[in-house]
Picture 1 (spheres, rainbow, N blue to C red):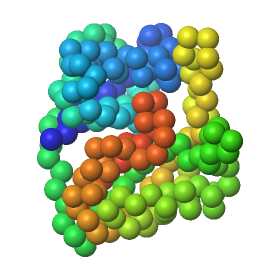
Picture 2 (cartoon, one colour):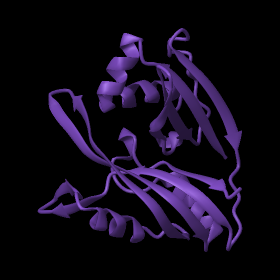
Picture 3 (cartoon, rainbow, N blue to C red):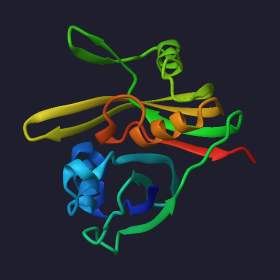
Length: 197
């Protein structure tokens, strides 16, 4: 049901440096893996740059409903592993989660990033995803920037970690597929879940 690609990007490569410095460039590169699909049949593509790094390598996760083709990426500086999995959850199950989100408030039809941790927490708790949030860490990652044609892009980035208790397994699967919050095309909204060890 879901394809998950794990990419390891060499930070010494100038192309990778350029991608990671501009979220719109990164978005376009990722969408290049799905150019054979018509937009109406592609479904949601989500991605997240992970905070963990190994020496000079950055890690990127990409989740999609369609199988990607990463042949356009340079093999000397990007290593990719793609797996297919079918998520299944049980009511009452305890799962760990990680989410990078763009928590915002809308005023006068304009979005503003939430600054206070209490507001960031309440923003996530209001998201009804078929599970009860148990938030342990809220990490303010600052701004994510990019440029689309002549328009500057700027997003507030917050990483949430903790665990959740499944209340509605089917709704939780839909939430995972659709993503959480705004700016899903720019590295936000990918909800990663794992069973408690």
